[in-house]
Image (cartoon, rainbow, N blue to C red):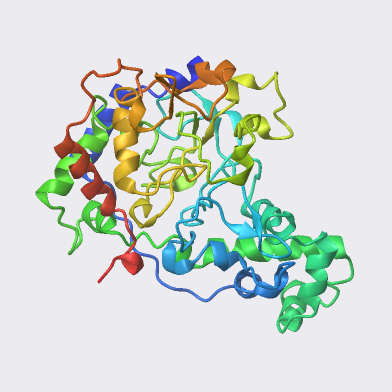
Length: 406
């Protein structure tokens, strides 16, 4: 991995900062009070749940970004089905739309929000950062053949114009809102963005951890959870804090549990994705973007965006390709990827095929931070069994109140 990415996060310095945050506790973050949505955001809400905006007539934004599941899928499919007949597979797992409001546009050399680490690739929406705003991101599923499968922007506008909220669309954007398909489409994208930014359900900050860090009733962490927090923060153990930063961040953000950076961590190839049945196919993250062609951008191949860990315990699929299906396995993967590679990768003629979803020529890009530090097979992993259990318990405290099982 390039120096700016591998060596720049300064895990020990981050950990020292983390201990200060734990000792002092972060500034109180009030749970947002519900406020009326703007006219544009109300239109965005209507669109978000409108299945008629898809080529199949069966797929809405909310189908894959279900509010009852942290605005993520409600199933455990590695990739979701879409297209005109709802039979076309995607190529990446669907991320949550929660806590996206502070994401900066992508840059190859983005300043890290921790104020310590060397700049590196960061920011942007989607798992390769190709969208600069939530509005731009919204255009991707509307037009993608494997998602909502509209033939054009004009196709989307035609459907909005025929919808029950067409008059409200005109009220929000003007009597001539539909005069130009190009402009009307931009209004539609702006509406979806406004909904995600204004509706508190996308960023409630209502987890047990939020209560804890704000010194509020109900925020007492158990001994197990506190031990897990320590594992999360320890540069010689979980070292989660190195990428899933939860201090004060960009644009006034705090406790996002991501630093917006990118990493190649060598997740196993997922054969449940039809595209992966072609041995010559590889999803290479940043360097699959049109504006990052190979070989000029080879140093970014295999890198995907670091997601927030908020609501991670509610997910049923993990990583960009949905290769793992439980949080317990994700923690174990980080801990034993190198010490027990046979657990995660296939063995061919007695040889474990490590990092089998990343072509050999790009493996220098692999993250080398603890606990993914390349330690010898069969050696002692960074975390004990108890520490992994404790870490999982802490990560469960990041679940928003509306998602906690009663």
